[in-house]
Amino acid sequence: MKRWMWLGLAAVVVIAAAISIIALPKGPEWTTSSPQALAEFQLALQSQMKLYYSDAIVHLMKAVELDPNFVMACVMLVDYAKFDDRINAEELVTKALAADVGSLRPRERCYVERLRAIRDKRPEDADRLLSEYRERYPNDPFALATEASRAFQRGDTENAERLYRRLIEVGPNWVIAYNQLGYLATAQGRFAEAEEHFTSYRFIAPDQANPHDSLGELYIILGRLPEAVQCFETALKIKPDFWDSYGHLVFARTLLEDFEGAAQAAAAPQTVPSCPARLQEELSCMATCLEFEMNGRWRDVLDLQSSPCLSEVAPSEICPRIEHRAACQLGDWQLAQDIEAKAKAYLDKARASGESMMSREEGMTPLLHMQGVRLALSGDFAGAEKAFSQVDANLAYTNSYVGMGKLFNRLYLVETLLAEGRDADAHKLLAEVRAVNPWLVARFEESGLKMMGLPRG
Image (tube, rainbow, N blue to C red; front, side):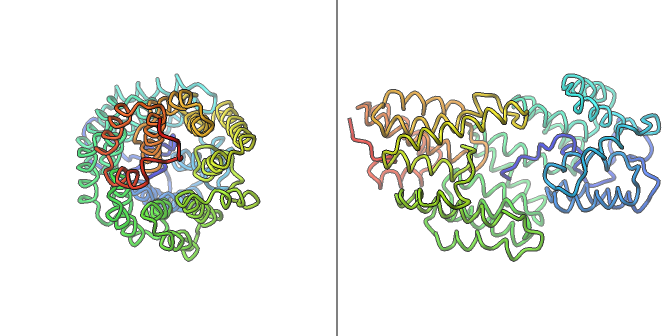
């Protein structure tokens, strides 16, 4: 799934209820006076485990309605506020922090105090509270999942893998751990291992959408596009409102140059109840921009400037990147630099506001790629090589979009090295790309080893 399930506090409470493990506080897991609210809460947990977030929100809101003092339901809803304007985060935080923690279970107390620390911008205290709870209850899967997610956010992949493997041991029902292990292996280029994790996940939970979606993302990176399409279509048959799969399906079909199929996939969500307002528009823009890019229709790309497709300035989004490339391919250097300036301002604002968990270097990577394209097409091959090389160093095979971005960036670098007359270095790098995605390299070779149309050195 493209959007990692690191939703902060909410992400840790993702399990079908009633797990029996050792070293946990005895008695009821959750504090509520309403059996009906508890039932809704348990349905929310089940939905979250499947990554059915829309369903989870509905159940959590119902739980809070049935028991306004259901602290953990309030805590879980807080983090969803950024995705659903029906949720009043301020009210929920106030309610949760006003609770008598002495009446709560130890786990609940931990998460209420963590919420307080996070609200007060004391991340060190939030981590300390979790560590202290984990020392007391080392086999609590909720806390274990939280610690694993924190390790992942910090880029501590070794510790994250260890924790997720432990999570499988102490909470066999936490099948989402297989998903996370698969993505961790994918990010590090351990693709055979990643496929094993995703396949195990699909075997254990074949009736859930996410196992199919995750495996499809891996198949895109590996160039196994027909298999990827099948995975995404299966996910959507299981769960028609599993929104991420529509984007992945559009992406895969476009790479296959099935532009009609991509357009149909982009339009499909409109028939599904509760479709997010802008989803179809975003998918249609992505399909259109990618089609224009793949066919070199640069003027058509810039003609979209008055449309919603190019209203975004986030350089990590597909359409702004393609707009920038179109400007460079047409030699409109002022427009290219204006796009870069807007992108930098956007990234700086995101970092200053705390909206991004990435380091400054990671956040600036898409902008650096833009600069590489401009430098290459303006004839500064040395500068372009440096930019593309830095992008490659910064990127991992995190998911289908980022992974393919890394591979395409490497082909841009191959072409730049050839323009510099460094054929041996170029073909060495090309062999590395082929080892990951032979389909992509075959297409690159069909184009004469050209992404941008640079002269050979």
